[in-house]
Length: 414
Picture 1 (tube, rainbow, N blue to C red):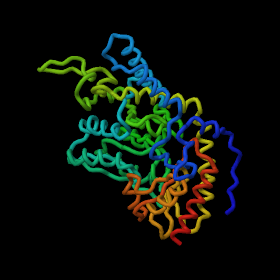
Picture 2 (cartoon, rainbow, N blue to C red):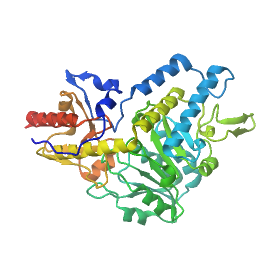
Picture 3 (cartoon, rainbow, N blue to C red):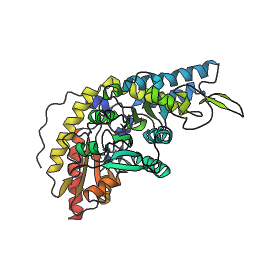
Picture 4 (cartoon, rainbow, N blue to C red):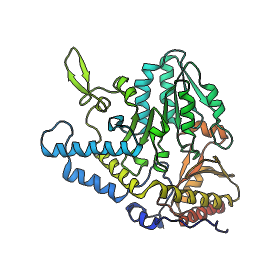
């Protein structure tokens, strides 16, 4: 099989890889080829060191202590909020709510803003390519309120049919919630255009940026969105931490999501008054180390730079697409003109789980299944796909290993 020619990569991927200790290990006696980045990315040493330092030398609860250790922890935690705000170009750190993940951010909006705004007969609009995390919360809300969930379709390439989405927007539409980049197709949606279509009708928009935010620069003010969610573990940061961006005027009007410590201003048995933003939405002791670790991950991404990351990943995607296209019986699921870093595919006559099992014997880690997007699988008439997803530390040599492993699948299954 001939290798696909690509342009020279002005990106020191070897230097980048040295900062991720996990990548140096072997699996089943073979060098690890980690291609499951859409599920979670690996963590650079800077993030690991930050987490270790907090627990070893800075562990204290925040916002409540007058002693030095607590004040230092508070400063680090709130400093991380400022970093995330700058990373997303929010107008103020108070527009950043720390959550467990993007899923919790969506649920927070559904259970606060949604409960306040959606009534019987109203509608919420999503798309056919959404992750379950951007389907189920709206189903729950619609069931509770007697509202209707409307779904914008996608075409055979996995692209959103924009005219059909626009046609769904009506006088009863209370919110549009749309994915920025599909985790199972790689499709990048024209989210600014979607926001414009919705805002022309006075409809707010939530964008699920779980995948997009580690592949490209995100500017929530340029997008003009009302809410944007990200998850730390896909941003080269810790698990159990994420962030919700929301416009201040909307967040101020929304009721609290949970009750408890730190989200209050004062409490009596007769009445509770709530804290100011962003603390109104952060009840109880938060994932302090996670937030600080996320701040370190944001620093790392900023230092590397999204221009360099996007250029490297674009060339990797082109290379991988060309190489995999030469494999007999392989069919891509998701061929949008605007896509990034994800290759979902099926091999004729072989179940994706068997594909994943065989390539694992060669040290190659890919994801198989429905990727929490069962409606996408139904749309394309497949039970599951195999998915290779790329990140800044992947190389063309690793793509070659994947191709070789997939050739072994053909040998095993004929």
